[in-house]
Length: 304
Image (cartoon, rainbow, N blue to C red; front, side, top):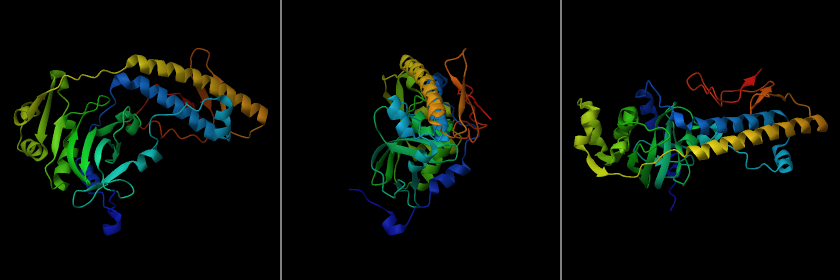
C-alpha cells in the first residue's frame, strides 16, 4: 500500500538536506577513473541530443528515418534527477517527489548540492547513472520500511566512498532518524570482509575521537568474497559503437538540414584524425556536462 504523507502534513521540509549542507565535504568523491570510458560515451550521446534540439529537426522524425532509437543516454539529466530526489520530514520519514513514503531497497547518490537522488533498486542501474557521472558526497543503497530508514551502506564500485567521506551524511541521518539504523561498510571488501555498525554507535565513536582504522573493532565483521570488477571490454565496445553512430547520425543530420531547408544554427566539421565530430554553433550551454569542479577533458568539444 502506498502511503502519501502530503495529505496529512503537507509537503515535507527536507531536513536532511539542510543538515547535510552544514556537514558538506570539502572534497567531493570522483567517479572511479576506470569508468571514464563509460562517461565519455555518455557525453558524446548527450552532446548529440543537445545539437539535435538546436537544429530544429524533430527528433522523432529524424530517428525513425535513421533507425537509431537506441542512441540514448543512460545518465540522468537534471530534470530526471529532480524527479528522483527523496526528502525527509521532521520525524525522520523519507518520501519521494510525490510525497509517497519509501519502501524497499533504493540505490542512491548524494550530489554536490546535498540532494539525495534515489530510485527503487533495479538490475544494471549504476550510481554513475544517477549522478550523471559527476562528483558526489556519498553513494550506496538504502532499505526503507514505511518511510523509515532501516539499513544504509556505501556499496558503490563506481565511486567507492569511505566512512570518512560519508561521515557528513551518516551524522545527519543520526540527527533526524529516531530508530536504530544499520550501516554496512563496503570500503574494506578488498580484505574480503564487510563491517556492520549500529549507526549511532559509529557516529558516537567518531565524535569521541576514535580513529577510522580502529572502527572495525566496534563492528560485526562478516566474510565477503564477492569481488566485482569493471567490465572494461563492454564499456570499450559501447564507446566504439557510440562513436560510429555519432558520426553517422551527424552526417545524416547535416544532409537532412541541407536538403530539407531547415533553418537552424547547427553545423559540423568532421575531423579526419578522430572518430569524433566537433560542432560549431550557438545557443549551447555546457553546464549540463561539466562545471569548474567537474571538468571532462574527454567530452566532445563545443565551440562558439
